[in-house]
Length: 354
Ligand SMILES: Cc1cc2nc3c(=O)[nH]c(=O)nc-3n(C[C@H](O)[C@H](O)[C@H](O)COP(=O)(O)O)c2cc1C
Image 1 (cartoon, rainbow, N blue to C red):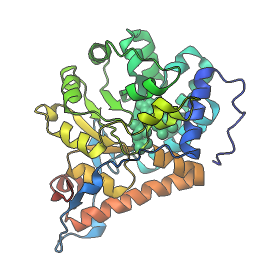
Image 2 (image 1 turned 60 degrees about the vertical axis):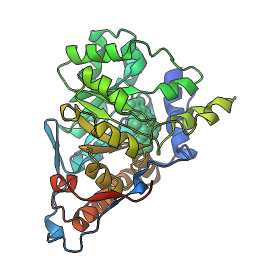
Image 3 (image 1 turned 90 degrees about the vertical axis):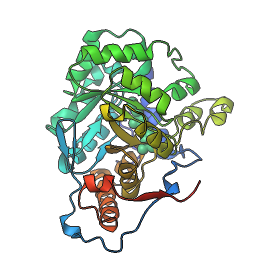
Image 4 (image 1 turned 180 degrees about the horizontal axis):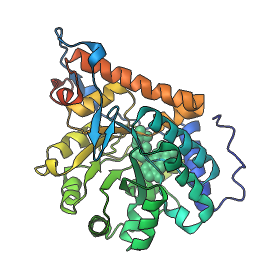
């Protein structure tokens, strides 16, 4: 999917569709990464010279809610809501079906307002069969006193197995047209948990969820937390590049809790066992996945690398990116003597840098 081919062009699209298209374009054409790292480089596995396992028998599969995944990897919530987004979602759904992993769709609100955009979301379930799919709604909409009928329509649109609520205060701060009223988010999330009969997952979008926020989310009854920490895609960067005045966005480019730090913090809260923990934000290879698992994550998620692989080499590129991650994950499992993911959770990992 070459980046020059943006479908019918931006003219004729509504402002939300245009914004979503510009987000994808900027991620593909510009450097929108944090200038600080996830912190995973501070951790190293202790090498096991006597692994006493057979590489060919390594099992990377995990259970996540009611689904069995071939590897602890989810393609994170990204897009939907315009023509090219439909093609992106359909390729990601193909990968997820072929490799039996889960995926998220991007924010669905706009599809409720304009039925032209429904197809770019519906295509996911049509192609993916019965894989794990997460719907997506923004914190600001949840705080707004959402209509239950609308949330149910979002769930039905992709026959979602879980609904992800994204926390994106950093993005809304820098976005010129951003929605900055975050009053009522936590009570809105608690209400969602009460009324929905599927798990509610709360995710950041790259600035990280720390222990204090995680405790509030557990009290609100969420089923999973995706820390989505700093070190990968910076939403301040993306929104900065959409503005004429770049001062504020540049100042906040690096704002956020690095992923490894957020993960370790949330993993250590007393109520940890009540939730599933997802590591994302700057996960760039199978070693990051392996380290995340050893540091307490149940599963990992990645966004930007999959979008880029698809853009550069189409669905084959997307599939080989995923296969590379699994090969690297298996390498780390072999060298720590972990023949399955539960053993990897107990593998020795040490902090080598302060
Ligand atoms: C193009 C793009 C669009 C995104 N749109 C959404 C979205 O609609 N909803 C959401 O929850 N997260 C969205 N995200 C955030 C990702 O799910 C993820 O939390 C973040 O990009 C950090 O992961 P990464 O470093 O692997 O990209 C988007 C990310 C990208 C790259």
